Image (cartoon, rainbow, N blue to C red; front, side, top):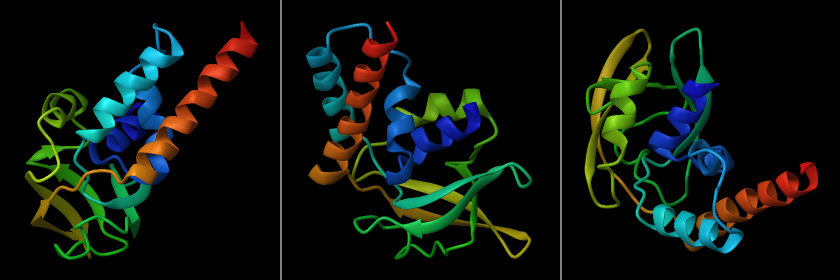
Length: 153
């Protein structure tokens, strides 16, 4: 599960944004403080522009679709590829991946490595930012967690 959250944090795929919102741990401030902090972080997070899920058999992130506003497809990423590394750091290397992800902002370029037909291929992708709609969906999903936590208490 940690790998899935890590991968989602790295590439911030839309389907995984609720997991991204919780990957930092439980919010300790007020709901408004959490909302402001999360919105600020999401506005500055660069995306490769893919959706998918972790494939434990391959130790990578199987790409199932593209985000409309992403550059992955134009960069040569194909549906069915398995993302195995970003900037040369294997996604299975949790410590390395965590150290590298903070440097990724919209407009920056990353080298992604995918497994395709049994061999690895590396390509450059210029990261894009989240749309206002994507930010709103992510924050909404996270705010639901506050309601659920309040009910549990």
